[in-house]
Length: 105
Image (cartoon, rainbow, N blue to C red; front, side, top):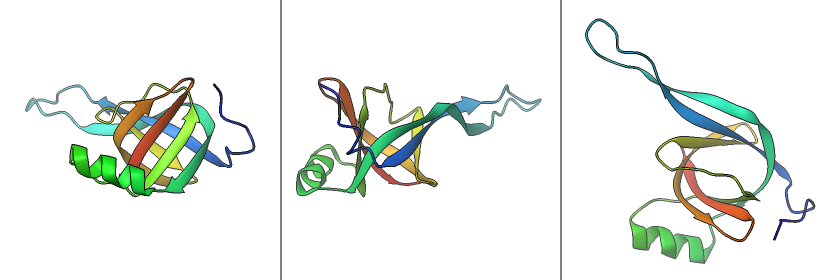
């Protein structure tokens, strides 16, 4: 199942965590680098169901984001939605699409 293009009214840029090589003291710096092109998505304030799920798994959520089948990881990815950066707190894969619970980063 694919999400209807008419629902995907926002643009989502996926960012991946990138660690620099260790410096002379053995410390690395972590940055977030964009991956690929922005993709269409639908972002909504967190629903009652999303809030309950977040509470059950012990994470925070402010929005839920729907997009067509993207592999995301809460620990290795962030999303920039319409110019605002969000940390991913949970990801669910459904039949052909992805739902990410996010909170402002």
